[in-house]
Length: 332
Image 1 (cartoon, rainbow, N blue to C red):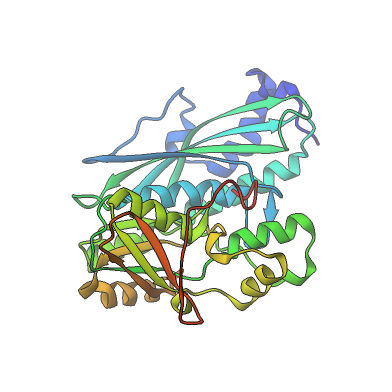
Image 2 (cartoon, rainbow, N blue to C red):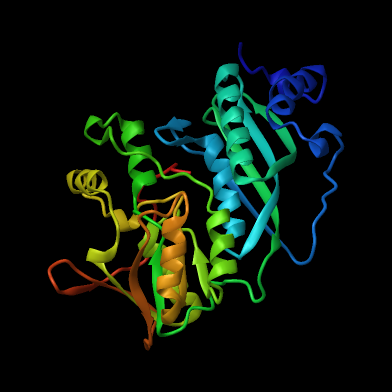
């Protein structure tokens, strides 16, 4: 069965698609009302984020466009120290898309939402003619409740702070590229797509005083650290030997001439906080489902101009600049 233009018309075909796919997978009391908007129950300050997902291929080892659409928005809300509660989703579908592909993506979204503890409560579907999009695009928006004041921010890193990551770098970017181009040498590379909200809640509750949280997605660790340095007006020094990178990712990057520090991650976070709290934060991360490989990788420094410096394996140092352009297109 294929997606037809009529499926986006707003008529009976649209209603059948909504009932047969989206309501069946995303079913909850708010969505079931089928109103034009969702009435939400939220307390205190609200955090909101939105993102679009256009990954190619749609499915890859460790995830899919469906898991990314949930994890990406859940994690963005979490990086402001908030508890994600509700998501909306909008699908742009290409005429002729196999219904089984949409079913699989929707099932992945539903499972990811349940595991993250969020509900998909409203949405929209459009169908465009063949060739107008690459199978399927998904946009999600999310809202959540702020858990701390002040919220972690890219503007709040301070000299003397420790810089931690919750795990290995580059898994997602190399996985998508390998599957897209049929690279058999990278068969054991798996995307790290995962929700980080529960880890963040524990960091806030058990450690506190978190200055900055960021998820290093497009542009990877190096680009995200440069963004933090520029926002806070500081320097950052990291040790190459301390940054966790799986050997399969390192080997694949060596073959392809890529740098794992610039590859996207979809289930990792950067945490910046006072040095004296680094060990406590590390212990919390390592006890979480997606933080077993967490590490302290460097520190925030005083600098005349914002900059990120890498202490290399060889004992030298080099500047890590922000990624210019797209190292890998269509990865999330």
